[in-house]
Length: 210
Image (cartoon, rainbow, N blue to C red; front, side):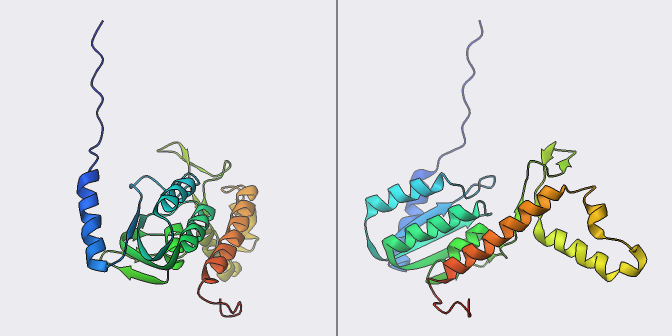
């Protein structure tokens, strides 16, 4: 019987990153909370209890900063993270050094200040989802994310060229994207608007201005 192969694990650079965080804390003068997603990880519901446990251990803070690096993820989890941070930190700064996209942008908008490095970027809160009835990527054999912005643009382009096509765009689109996917994306978009409005309520009380 052959020996069991040695497990290969990626390096965990905890000590090195903690040193960098301490340097950032000294330079900024406030405690730093790091929220850093790997390239293939997204904001998810499991992050909420982890953040709650961390903040409960730290206690109430007058001022603090959160470093955000993420390609996005679950929009409701992003809102819950904002609520947790706002309960525990009286004045919150957001530091973005790289990706701060989609739901991560919502987290940044929940802060009182946003500081961005030369490679950092925020994005629109574009609603996209991989539904159980989404089209399948033939190369990866996985359900693809369908974006509301993409669907809206297709319908608009079709309408602008209506004289050439002479028809309802949805008749043809439903051959490629299931009607239930359209409905799910529309529902998700309504949720995105509600979440953004709730986050902005920390800064703007007038609902008309939001």
